[in-house]
Image (cartoon, rainbow, N blue to C red; front, side, top):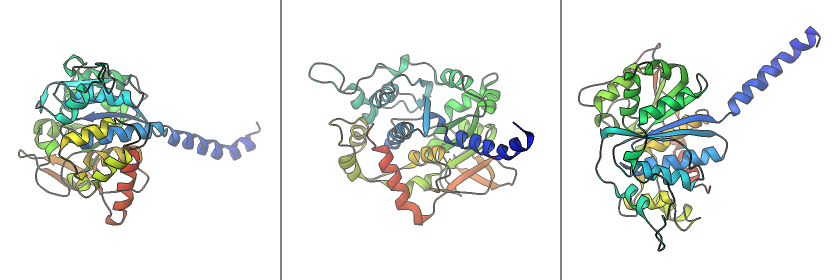
Amino acid sequence: MPPDSFRRLLPLLLLAALSARAAEPVRLIFDTDIGNDIDDALALAMIHALQSRGEARLLAVTITKDNPYAGPYVDLVNTFYERPDIPIGVVKKGKTPRDSAMIRIPATRRNPDGSFVYPHRLTDGRTAPDAVSVLRRVLAAQPDGSVVIVQTGFSTNLARLLAEPAGRDLAARKVRLLVAMAGHFPSGPPEFNVKTDIPSAQKVFADWPSPIVFSGYEIGTALLFPAAAIERDFSWVPNHPIADAYRHYKPMPYDRPTWDLTAALYAIRPDDNYFGLSEPGRVTVDESGRTHFTSDPAGTRRYLVLDPAVKSRVVEALVLLASQPR
């Protein structure tokens, strides 16, 4: 090709390359305390919907709730969405081991013939691989700078990854963004995910090598998932593991904040104007679990900001995606 022709074509080639890159599904790891609240289950359903749309690729699910039914519930949801081979890692000697009907009942429901209502292979989370080993293996297999982690539980798993030999370097090379449902911004009382494991939150918020975007308590609280949608929009199958979990989390009907869904939505669709972003800065955690944001032009931490004018649009997107037929 003559040099002049190549120079004229080069901008088009660059644009095509950028477009192809933008069109690639987001490589996602979902780190969750599933079983402590229903929003984790709704977020997982939404991630599957976005994978079906070609917008995401769920690489692994790692769990920070140390309960034997958390892993089986994730497995049955992944199997329900016809992705039974997604790796699952479970925290060892972690937090919140208490019982949770929202995961235990779907994981143990059986048909009259004895088969599971929701098929799954993992029946006891204690037999699943350690979450940090799964993080290391999955991250190592991905291209540099390609992975987004959505953390919707405690910082236990990610803090343990940072503490491992070469763990921080692995995160720095492979993870381009961490989106965490954590904290309360610009200020507020201690938030559950932070105060449950304060040392781990302190470590991750200070030392995580890639940028972090926080979806604070105030975001999900302003966006309620409607109970009516559970009865209406999930009825495309007789037994739906997300609706089943929702009904067993609290007595129906109730609307629930969408904390974890907002983190997942931003992670996969950051440019769709669902949320604004704060100025860059630093986030610290005090000994009570309160988060403190300090503006700093050189900082790599930001938090989501919600425009009241778009609240109905965001809720509509969350409901549509969480309930989307497979």
